[in-house]
Amino acid sequence: MKVLLIGFGSIGKRHCEVLSNFSKIKKIDLVTKQDIKNKMCYKSLDFVSDLNQYDYFVISSETNKHYEQLQFLEERVKDKLIFCEKPLFEAKRELKIKNNRVYIGYVLRFYPLLAKLKEILSHETVLSVNVRCGQYLPFWRPNTDYKNSYSSKKDKGGGVLLDLSHEIDYIQWMFGEFDEINSYQVKVSDLEIDSDDLTILIGKTIKGIFVSLSLDYISKITHRDIIVETLNYTYVLDFILNKMIRKGKDGKEKSFEIPNFERNFMFEKMHTDVLSKRKNVCAYKEALKVMNTIAIIQEQNNE
Image: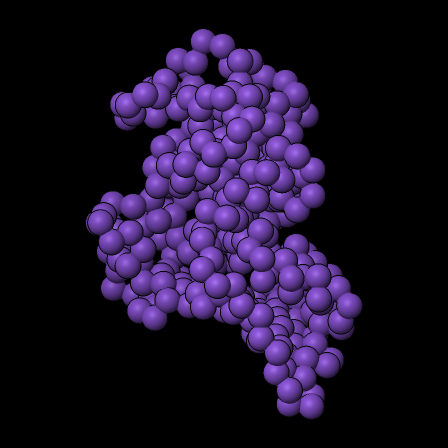
C-alpha cells in the first residue's frame, strides 16, 4: 500500500510517524514545499504525475486548503480511501463525494475513556452534558510564535470553533445532532489574533439532551473535560488527567484510569479503522453535520 500525505506540518508529521509503523504501508510520499530527507516530495498536487499509484490519501494541510484538495482528488481518482484532518472546511461548503470514500480526523472518538463512556451511556438516560476545552494559545506550540500560526488567522480556518471542533463532533456522535442552539463566538482577549478565542454554546440535541459547551484560547490552566448527568449517576471525564469518575445516588464512586497514555495510540487506532472496518471513524456525511452546526454558530455571530 502506498500513501500520499498532503501537508507536512506538526499534524502531518504525526500522521507520517504513525503510518510508518503499519506493515501494510510500503511507501509514504509527501506533498510539501519542504525538502524532506529520504522522502519523495511534490511541491503541490499538480506535480504528482500518477495519482492512481496511491491507495490512501491523507490531507493534513491548513483547513482553508481542504476543499480545494478534496475536490482535486475527487475529480481525478476513483475508489480510493481519503482521510482529511479536522475540521472538514473553514466554513460550510457544498462538495459531493461520489467517487471515493472520505473520512475525517476526529481522533477523540478513539480516546479509550470516551469510547467507554459512550458504551456505558447507551444503557442510561442522559439528562445533561457540560463540555469544556481551553488552553492559552501561546502555550500550544512553545517553539513557535502563536501570531504566525494558522490558529490565529481567521482566513486560514483558525479560531477555537474550528480548531476545537472535536468537541462538537463527539457531542453529536454520542448524544445526537443539535436541534436548538444559542451561542457566542467572540474575540475577548488581548491576544494578537483576528480569529475567535472564545465560543460558548447552550443547546439541545434531537434526543432532548441539554448541552453546554465552552471552547477557548484564553485559559492559562489547560482543561478538557466532559460532565454527564444521568438519572442515576454523574460522570466526570478529564482528558488531561486521563481519568473518569462515576458517582451514584448512594454517594459511592468508581474511577477509570489510563496509565501511561500515549496520544499516538488514538491516531494508530483511527487509521487502523479507516483501513479496515471503518466502524467508529467520522464519515464524510457526519463531518458535514459538524459543519452544519459550525455554520449555525457562525451565522448567529456574524456582525
